[in-house]
Length: 247
Image 1: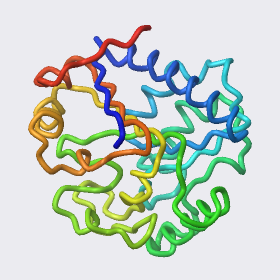
Image 2: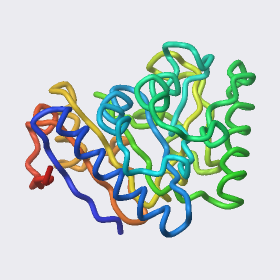
Image 3: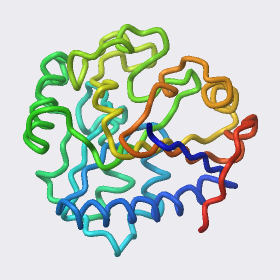
């Protein structure tokens, strides 16, 4: 069973510093072991918090990174709704990852979520081979409804285990059409790391972590560890013991 750790920070800036250090650690270990680092990103506020410090990191060999997205909206890559664009502006434009190691949704298929999902599975197989990929790190956010990736409460995709990537055309949060990692893929990561900020997440965090209510984010596990980085506002209702991260 994966170890789970909970960390609370005074602000998102301290989270950015801790993320920079944790990602540096995981990247170095993965590159030493397998000559590459595989990471999946999410949208929301995460790209900005991640990029704040990481974009200036000189200790990481970014040329060995392969970057995917845990979910993506079926929109053009230059759309303000694109998770890729958010990461590009806050991080990818500032570091040197070979373009063919940045694995986006196929922009020619954004009008067909089913084909876009199948294409993304093929992109995974090109990097990981057949079988279920084991990402070194998946960075996740959590919505006020407890969703992660594009796995929403009460949605049929919560029970979808037949493919690594699933299309969704009825997202309760716009835009409605997306592709998303499914649990077999998410839970096969070595490390899953949540970044959650803001008072608006405090209630659902309490329900997910303390009360163990069945929300999508609470179903996430990993091969080795699940880590929660939260600001004090988001963690304000938690009863679980919180650890201090040395900065």
